[in-house]
View 1 (cartoon, rainbow, N blue to C red):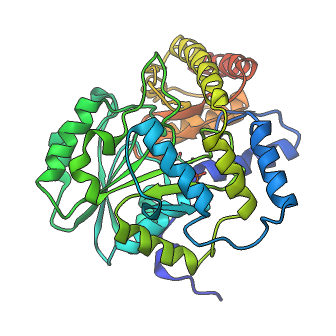
View 2: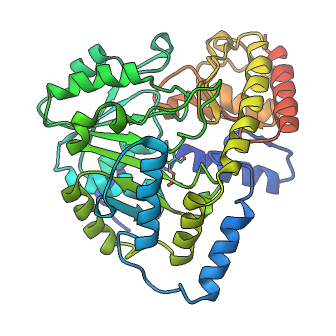
Length: 400
Ligand code: PLP
């Protein structure tokens, strides 16, 4: 029998990837499923970006690149940080990876020794704790709830920090809650970190372009430049330009950390796909109207889905400031009984009930460390939102 090592044996598959597999399986069995689990845009990659990849392939950009990414892409990333965030990085302070996900993993691998702690507030993107564990770290989950708008407070942060704390991971706009930290909130958290020089800050800003109501996302390094020497910014083209399958993410931060991440990447993937990197250059340097248009469409969808869900008895749905997820509270459904006599005891029960009874796939909040909630992606058409919410409502009305 194969003996699996302790670390991989202690992690689980991403629930959104697992949900996708289940939806695919149910559809193959002939069931019609409305899929609200997707963590990616439903738009196609803009044509000028696809064209750039095609041209790169045609012109022979088909070989290994340097492990930190092509010079052209790192220059485009430096330009993006200057233009959009008002932050000056050098090209050497930037590394490109096969998605932001690979860079978060590599950042932990570069810095965590056995037992080092990674502070992760709830609700969190599911991969942070598992990536910490697989690299020998210990996730310190800080329970943060709806009463603070799903946002970490200085007091909660202060009480989570120990001498072993190595990282604080913040994700704004947040997956799954949609919470967006204001500059004032960032400044107050930065003030706590200033007291604890052993803690590095990882700021995952991958949803930065999807903030609504005329607001914008504040870049942490812009607000707290005093922490720049220990802040790693994580970003990528996946969400902003509907490029999840191209697998290009990037990180920027202190030189020594970037060099160590690059060393690790050089011994794993060597470099990201050369044609994908050419596409990312076109995305970052080219016309940005796609991002603005996508933002406006997401805002319309957000308003529609919040209205429909909040009107369902037993559901209360906060209006997210950013990203493309809603995180409704389902406590009003707990204790209710389905037509076959089962009682809904948890958000996982609710998500399974919705899949079975409503043909609607959502993800349980327990996967994100905060119950009783479910995550619903609105990166899908208004028709799908309308149909899915109607089926959701009918299923809820069948509960006793
Ligand atoms: N960070 C967050 C918060 C995400 O939701 C995701 C994707 O779902 C990622 C990072 C990873 O993005 P990618 O690896 O496609 O760049």
